Amino acid sequence: MQRVPELLVEFYSRPGYLAIIRHMIDTLCGRLGFTPAESSQVCLAVDEALCNVIRHGYDSAPDGRIRLAVHEYSEKGRLEILIEDDAKQVDLDTIRSRDLEDVRPGGLGVHLINEIMDDAVYEHRKEGGMRLLMWKRLPRTAEPAKANQEVDAGES
Image 1 (tube, rainbow, N blue to C red):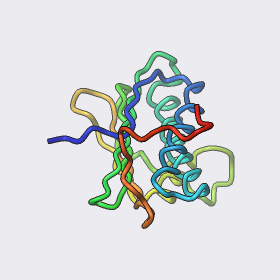
Image 2 (cartoon, one colour; image 1 turned 45 degrees about the vertical axis):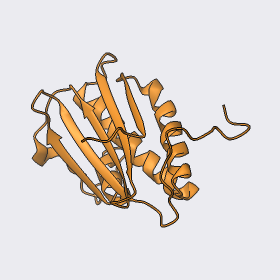
Image 3 (cartoon, one colour; image 1 turned 90 degrees about the vertical axis):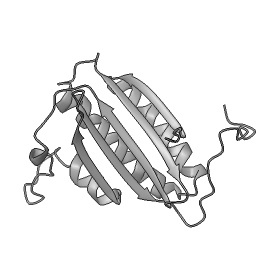
């Protein structure tokens, strides 16, 4: 039986949605016990991955579909983030950071993802498009997310 993710969202490949995604990831990470700095890093990894999908997978076209699923597995002690798209498939051997000695803007998304997350696995989807599964160890203080958790006073 497959578990329902804590967060599941499908959206268009438009950069304007990225701030909303970062806010959702940041809020969920905070509820799972990540420090603000750790939450920001996870947000950065997700943002870099989504930017790569938009820029390289969809060539910045605004009508591509992206699916994001976030699972909290307390029994595994980790947070899993799955990103899927229907964009063009790329050669898996080409997904790597540029040489860090090559000082110039851009091109560090894959490097940042690999530095921040405990693991990141890129795959071709048999239906077309790509899949990225990233995971990060949960903080020791993490409590399982509850689907019926009440919204804190002052949150909207």
